Image (cartoon, rainbow, N blue to C red):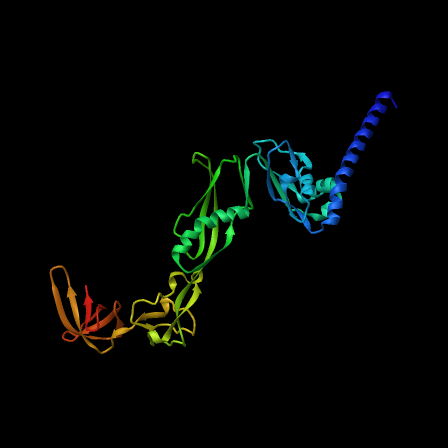
Length: 334
C-alpha cells in the first residue's frame, strides 16, 4: 500500500473513532434517563418546518411524559440531516428511512419513539396541523350554529392532514358560501398574504348534527285522524336527517294522511289540511276578478281543507268545476 493510502486509511479510522465516540457519549445519558423515566415518549410529527441549515430532533418531534428538562434539551438539539433548500416544495421522508436515522442517533431510545408513516418537511414559513385547521373552521362555524338554535355537533371534517405556508406572516381565512344548515356543509379555506391577497384556495366540508324538539305522536296516528294538541308531544331529533321535511307544529287544522307511529317525527308529507268542507256540503262558489265578482250555489263532491282544491257541481247547470277552498262556506274559482 502506498504512503498516501496509509494516510487516508488512518484519517478514516480517526474519523470513525470520533463519530463512534460522539454517538456513545450522546447515547449514554438518554439511556440512563430512560431507565429512570420510563413513562415518556418522543412523537415524530407528520409535518414540520425547519429554520436552520440542519434538521434537528426538536424540529420534528414532540416530547411527552416525565423527561428531565436537560435530557429534553439534549435530545432536541440532536442534528439529523441537512434541511431542504429554502423555497423548495416540501419534501417527504417515509417511516423506514426515519427509523434508520433515529436508530442511528438514539440507539435503544428508538423504542420510545412514535413514528408516522410519512414526515413532510419545509424550510421556512409555517405549518398548520389538521387539528389546527379544524379549530379554525369551528371558530367560524360556531356563531352560525348557535344562531340556528338547538344542540349541535360538528363531525366528519374534510381537511388536509397539514397545510404549509410559504411565509410565517401568511394567514388563514375560512369562507362559508351559504348559511350553515343541518347535514353536510361545504366551505373554502384561503391562504392570504399580510396585505390580504388570496394566495391559495382549498375546499372542505363538515357534517353538522343539530338536535331540536319536533312534534311526535303520543300514540299511533291513523289515516284521516285529526291531529289535536293532546295527541302531540315534543322530542329532540337530529335535524340533519329530517331537514325541512319535518312538520313544525304550526298551522292547521290538520289530519293524518299517512299513519305515524308513536314517538316518530311527524313529517309534512304525513299530514294534510283537515277538511272544512265535506262531500255533499252545499257551499258558495265564488268567481272574482279585478272588475267582477260572481257567486253561485254548488255542492262539494269531495272533502277539502283550506287551500286545497275540490270538485264542485253547480246546482243549477249541473256543471262540474274545480275550485280552491277558502273557508267552510266558500270555494273560489279563477
